[in-house]
Length: 310
Image: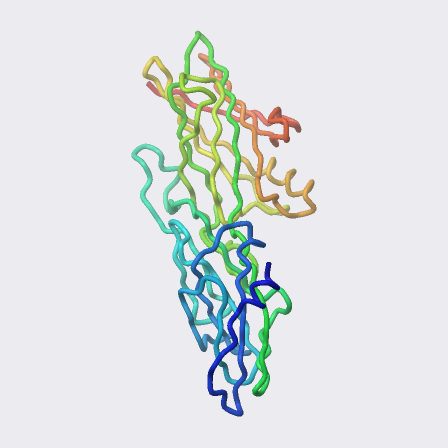
């Protein structure tokens, strides 16, 4: 697709000075697994300073640049609930999730910002053929870029076991230990501070159910192999049909570290977790384990405490 796009770029009819070269950089949206989108091209010099910005590109950038070596960041401009900052420098260019307010009664802790879920965010910090753009004297440089989706999805399956015939009317949660941004130039998420994302889990059926699933888009999770307990947490509020509410916060970090170990140190695009909530009159707890492809879970459960409020 990239080759066809390059071949389809119309040759220029421009005056090129002796200290300039011509550049065509095609967008390969098919390779990114998405339909055509509008993009912004950010060109940086060898020192990493922004020297040229072009927006509204949908298929191919075509233009003249002074002879030299450039770095490039390309990102789509129709992403949801995100913005960009630090674009004056190559390594500080960051796509970040916008902040929002917590729903009443669902704040997981003081000083933890709540962010919106980043949606449909695509970007790259280099070209397919090379890391840099080499502009040669009075010559034509043909390249292509394939922006990659920057987000991962945390998929959490909740199974609820209640006593006394109680049913769950709703399950609301807050996922903590979330990165708020991504640096395409450095190819990593921003791990400088911890944020949280709210979610409402969907029941397995339209009626009250004992199985709920939540899928949360994030730039990244802060857990690493060396992270302390409590790096990634989830706060859950269960609304029961007798009008009471069960709430609790528990640690995802050990389970996430097992997922990291099984993946060679990297999280998969979909990060699967299974949480079993045990609601008893005098004993409220939860277990967390990886959710395997069959949805039945695997690994050793880890019981954790909960609280009931009327």
